[in-house]
Length: 198
Image (tube, rainbow, N blue to C red):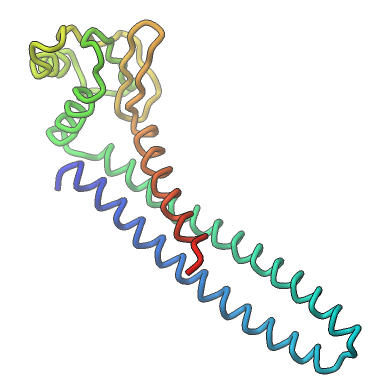
């Protein structure tokens, strides 16, 4: 399984888990609403007209509080699941074998290059992106670019991936940034599902 497939599988698993959580939350909310309606019906039957009006107000408050609590619990569970999924995704990226890692980094570097004369800044513990790797990427960039990428002497605490730097312009392709982007896309998709009126 190559790195792209690993990432896609992780995101697919996260989506499936998120859909399961959304359905559980909807089920819990429906059950809670049913119980609240039953209790409020008993209260209404025992009350006078004035008490019925108070009951309506109470129902609104109780339902609003129940919705807020359900949403809070769902958000907490969703965050836990996503934290675990994306921590696992980062771990799998870091544990790619050397060949898959270099292929992924080469593709990402070629896609991120703008001028071809950027500096490549790597993680302080990086051993797989070296002078030879950068030389190969320069060859792969072809004639449309200068092909003058160079490995920087600077090292950063990236946890994997790299940063392309040209003057004050930096393009961050670290694992943390890649995972954050995937997470944001997934959270937007989840939010749409959570708050849609189905």
